[in-house]
Length: 154
Image (tube, rainbow, N blue to C red; front, side, top):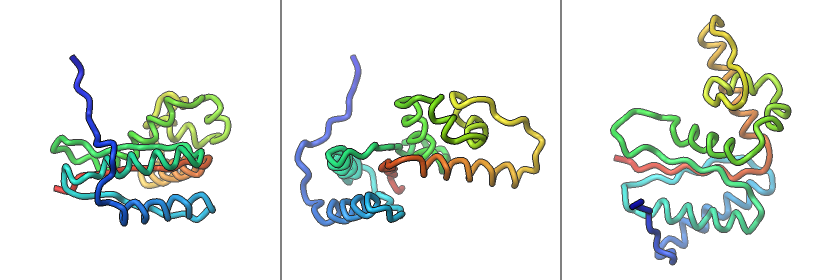
């Protein structure tokens, strides 16, 4: 038997937060960049709030990328973003994306093997890290996508 997360179908008491998120969504659709982080203690309704925003984003024909922090006591600071990118890669055509990203897809292949062959190690570590971050930025700029990440703060 599989367990599934159950969310209340009605959003209760989060009108102000949802309004702020919707404003950010509309701003992103106008081409304005920005970041909104939804954080808080476990059980405070972050997932429900983000789910409602996702529903509204789909109505506006946005593609959505989502990731979440781990419940484990591990230090994985980029996990929500890696999960969101990985989920997005499984829903699209990696060959088409490789073509659009060019050599940046090789840098991303360090984290996402479906994008090709990772470059051989040997470059100076800070330069390699900078190229990887630039490749991630290029990926995130590729198309109109709503990117969501939520975390519990403990």
